Image (cartoon, rainbow, N blue to C red; front, side, top):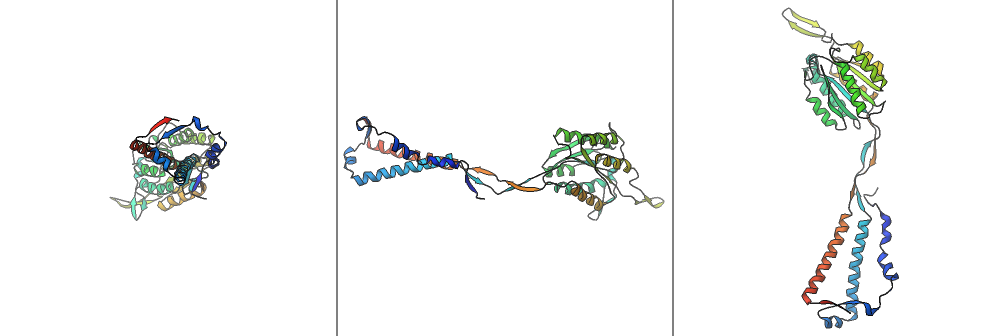
Length: 340
């Protein structure tokens, strides 16, 4: 495709209009014409026919140039930028992240260092968000309370920044899973998301211990409204802790309510995943990319820059320069306009 075009190219038919008007318009009798008496009329009359013909040709060429520029401006010349890929289809996806006190358990490894669950979750979830090209992504943070940190947006960088700033205990030390589901459904519905495109990914390491809505009741309502919920239970199965009596094996995920999380996912047509370490968590998000693929792209849009101001401004400048030159010549010679 060419990078240049005229939006209203058919207006080119106006180019010969002045010639047609001059040819069709009846001539005015010489006796009724007004004449411009130049200051040195004798000198003007002394010009030979070749000189007068040359002046007329230059005047006509200048008028033709001005008219051509005006017609070109009316035809709306445009410059087309490079094609921009736009999503063909997309998802509206809310990510709900647990900030309860148990998320500070340091049973995950990240880049060779032991980190808490929230830090590992942030790193993996940020990569997942970055891959959701063409999707609107929102963020819900929940503990004792649930709140929308980021509404649905195409600005994935902002979602990642706000996720990275989340802190354990920011929403309280307890876990309101049911409220997080209800808030996700409310946010997707208020955003006008059609049924079948409402997706919630809920990540937690515990059981429902707070909130106004029971998780299974919230899941039932979500299923009725066409929202799919994928639940992720995070936390290691075992770890070794030192005490006064030596090293002992403990289960840091003893409070994880896998039964309820599985029921929530099955009731809404989603799936339950178990993440015992950072690699398993990354694999889960890779599976989510396959289950809920991001938008395909198609090159169907080219930015348009309007350029009609350039020929229009050029025509105006030439007209002003011509008028200014004629005015200076008139004042310099002391000529006057009289009736013939």
